[in-house]
Length: 384
Picture 1 (tube, rainbow, N blue to C red):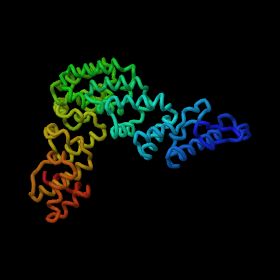
Picture 2 (tube, rainbow, N blue to C red):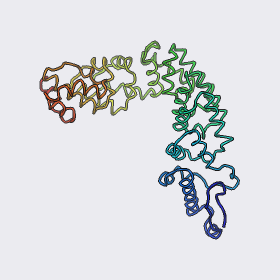
Picture 3 (spheres, one colour):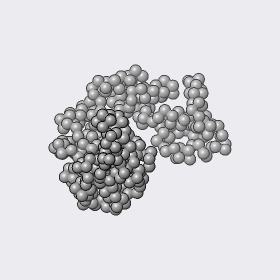
Picture 4 (cartoon, rainbow, N blue to C red):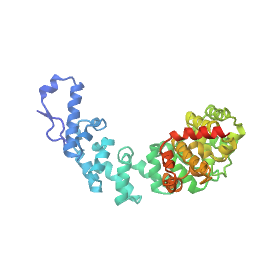
C-alpha cells in the first residue's frame, strides 16, 4: 500500500496495483485525488460535505511527501485561534483553498502581524480576514506592509486602504507604486479636497491604477468637452465619464437625447448637473427619456433641472407616478414627481400612501400594481 497523503490526510491510501492500471493523469486518478481532498476537508477542516464538493475546493491538490510540514490543520487551527468561527473558516477555505498549503510560521503569521502592526486586532482582525482572505494567500508580506503604509497615507486610514484593495488587488502590485503616486497627485492638483478625494478613490480605486498620461487627458476633457469646472462638485463624476467612455461612445449618448429634441447645449446643461446620466446603459437611457418626454409630455427643461429622474428604475418611476396621479386628481397634494423620487421606500409610504389608505383604498392598489399607470397616462394624454 502507498500512502499518498502523508501530511495530514489520514487513512488516504491506494493500492499500487490500482495505480499501475490507470494512466498517470487519467480522469479516474483525478477523481480519486479529488475524493481524498474532500474526505480530509470534511473530517479535519470543519467543512460540510456539500462545501467540500464545490469546484474550488476540489482544486486543492493531493499533497506530496515533500510538503509534509505544510499540514492543512495548522492553517485552520490558526484561523480558529484568531477567533474565526467554523462557518467563517469554511467560507475562507471554500473561496481560497490555497490557504491550506500555506506555511503558518513562514507565510501566514508574518502577514497577520503586519495587520496587527497597523492596529487591526481582535474583532476587527477577524472581520478583515473573513472579508479579505486574499491578504493571506495572494500578497507577499513585504508587499502588504509597504503598500498598506502607502495607501493609508493617501486614503486617510487603514480601513479605507483595505476597502480599496478589496475592490482592486492591483493596488498591492509593486510595479504600480509610481502610477499610484502620480495619479493621486494629478487628481489633487485639481483642487479636490482630501476628504472628497479619499471617498472617491476608495469607491473607485481603479483610477489610481490607470496610465497617468491617460488620467491627465481625461481630466482636461472634463472641462473642455463637458464644460464642468474643477471647482464643481460634479467634476469627479465628469472624470468618471471621460475615463469610461470613448469619443464615439459619448457621441452615441448625445444622439439618444437629440432624437427627442434635445440640443447639444441641453445635454451639456444636464451633464453639468449630473454627468452620471451619460454612464447609463443606452437602452435604459432611451426608455426613460422616451417615457418622460413622449408618454408624460414633460418639457426638456424640466429634465435638465431634475436629471436624477433618468437614473431611477422604471418600476420605481411607474409605481410612484401612479400614486401621485391619484393624489393630484383628488386634489390632496400637488407635489412633483421630482420631489418624491429621492425618498426611501419607507418615507414614501409614510408620506404618500399609508395616510390615505382608509380614505382612498385604491391608492394602495395603485402603488401595488403598475397596471394603473397605463390608464393614468392615457387620462393625462386625453386632457391635453
